[in-house]
Length: 224
Image (cartoon, rainbow, N blue to C red; front, side, top):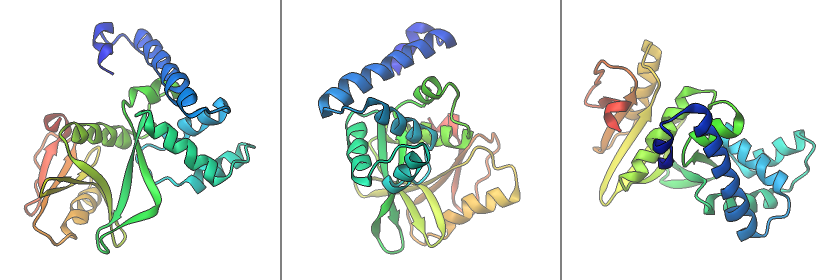
């Protein structure tokens, strides 16, 4: 959130600001606009989404999780809450596309938060996996650049972002560090499996250029 520049990014003040901002969004934008009565349920669903950033999520999985928390909630209610949360621009939904069958997979979606600092403020810790923090940062940057974004699945391989703008398409994999041969083979191999002429890119925090067989490699900081 851009106002944090005025707070000089002081941790305590920034967290208080983000917590206040979150409460404003939940109370004013989501609860009032959608006439939601169960604020506690809404809060639990948002926290679940924040804690699973970048992972495939379904309304059924959320309902099952809530049941384990002694909250029996039907799938249709979860779907209603997800639409309300998304309409507030607190989170953004990414559809998962079957790249081989050229169709959208309807069971699962991925969710990213408008500012991952909100996760830190709400959960009292940052997202546990730095991988998904980086994915979230890249996702927001791609939105800023005007891309239409989906996630991809090709056979059993997963593509983090399939980015489309006008007639151009770009496939992107995001990794924290390409620290092992296995990681390099997975990230580049997933892209190499897609046999088209569209641009393909791996983003990581590595400072060395690890370009492989025509697939671009960039440092995430340089990219953004």
